[in-house]
Image (cartoon, rainbow over all chains, first blue to last red; front, side, top):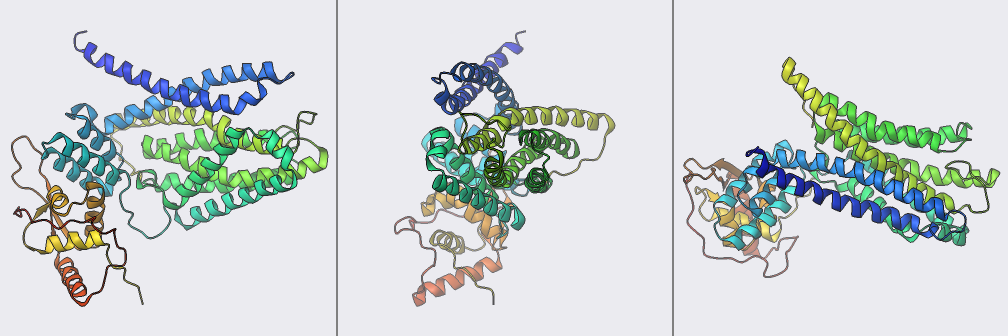
Length: 361
Length: 116
């Protein structure tokens, strides 16, 4: 007991810190996106109930997933052995370096050990952490390859064009149906997606398998949504396609990547790239097909609902809310937790069976 | 024909500092202090120079007690050729293409070089 006690308090403090940050972010995002409905005479009660349930569920899952990532990161950084904050900062940053740059991480760490002055240590650690998090790239090509960059640029451009179309042709319906938070949120997420496809840090592109799997899943998701929609397979709503595809992209495939590479880092990268590429591929298709469907039968593309509370502009809020926020908010934590379990299981079986390791990058 | 990019002002300063005493091995922090360049800029410069075969790296043989061995740097023959080229360019008035704002790089008296 006397050995466990000193370790217990920092662990609980870190867990509470992670829980607090995740709860604030998740609850804030859900509140901002759902609050316009709270005062609605018909939908108000349901909106409150949905907000509370979703906040508790997503905050809990998000906390567990963030905690797993934090524990994996601090273990990789060997944080417990570092003497002070500058050393811990460098250790955390260096832990994100790809294998080809690990020597440089060791160089920065060793250099810090020769600096005694506290201010100089802090400055050197801050600069070195920046260099470790964003090391120079080797090749003069996009981080996700030409195909990934092309999909990113085309997808984001097409979605931007579709949104502009909605804003020009149906300005009142689109603006009224889109909460300000979702408007800002989708711009931020899409700019981030575009930036990642073009200039992602090396820490996020070290697994070629994760990048390729994410890219081809994204292409398949976009093409699949279009074909399913045009062949009449989505008469009950696009949810019947989107939920299984995102489950596959964000949970099942990352677990398979974890099993193949025995690497949680590679699995998390496959979640990231699956989300990025499936989002930029499906969003423009969603809006185009939503407009087509609305003109055909007046129903929403998401679930076929048609009523006095829905307009053609509701499709934009649906697309952003469900494709970028609600479903990923549920499935990304599940994907991380699943990948962590699979990674631990495969590593355990590897230790037992002494199997050869497959490189993740 | 492949276009050759001129190195930035900071990279030029690092190459010149390393060329002052070619056989000497230098520490990263020592170069930071000598040139007034922050670690966040210095290490990417050193990484790029090493990637291009202009910089040779090694680890310290006899670190102080309880300290890990530090990384040491010096120019390769290609790096020395680049340094000579940069000196020639400076003499003929050619300026680096990717200039940092004036005053970002401070030339200071060089600290003693280290031998591995």
